[in-house]
Structures are given as C-alpha cells and as structure tokens.
Length: 128
Image (cartoon, rainbow, N blue to C red; front, side):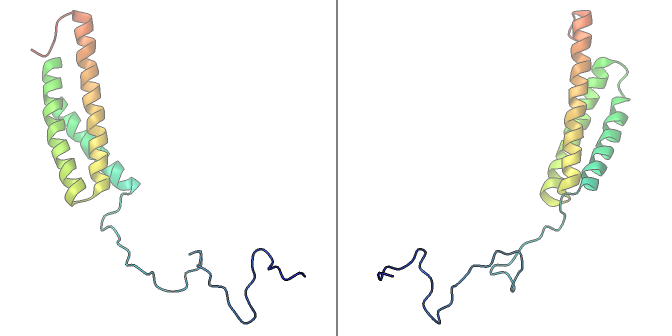
C-alpha cells in the first residue's frame, strides 16, 4: 500500500467500535422511563361504547311520535351522549368514549337524513 487509509477506516489494533444497539435485543433497562396508559383503547371497548350509544339513541328516538319529535329527541340524546364521551375520553376509558362518539355521530346523520327526506317529499320544513 502507499500509506493511504482504506475507506471506511478500520479500527486500529486493539480498538473496539462503539455500536448503538438496534433495540431488537434489549441489553438492559431503558434510558428513560416508559409510561403506560391505565385504559388503552381496545376494539372491545369501542364496540361496547358503540352498543351502549346505539341503545341510548334508539330508546330516546322511540319517544318521538313523529319526525320532528324523533329528530329533537335524537339531538338531545346525542348531546348528552357526547358529554359522556368527552368525560370518558378525558377521565375514563378512551375506547368506550370513542365508540360512543362515533355511533352518536352516525345517529345524528340518520336523523338528519330522515328530516331531509321528509322535507324533500313534503316541501315543508318539518322541524318547526
């Protein structure tokens, strides 16, 4: 050789390379503490929240005797359900709160579609 170092430069004799572990095989405790959620989001929690919210909206929707009554009861029940979902997401099980919020939004969409179909077929705004 002509005295030029090879690329990449290898370690000198007796010198070890410092390698950062990949994390695949942990070599000790983590450098920083890890935080675990007390109530992680699970599919069963989302399904349970959705089932309870669906039953809640159906029970309130059945109180209405006509389209405006159904729509107003659904809006009121949905507002109460969303308040419960906000409390669950903040202080309780986030999965259940997510299921409640998703199904409540779907229930509001159905009530809106019923009102729009009634309005389109009768040419009279049915809400008041």
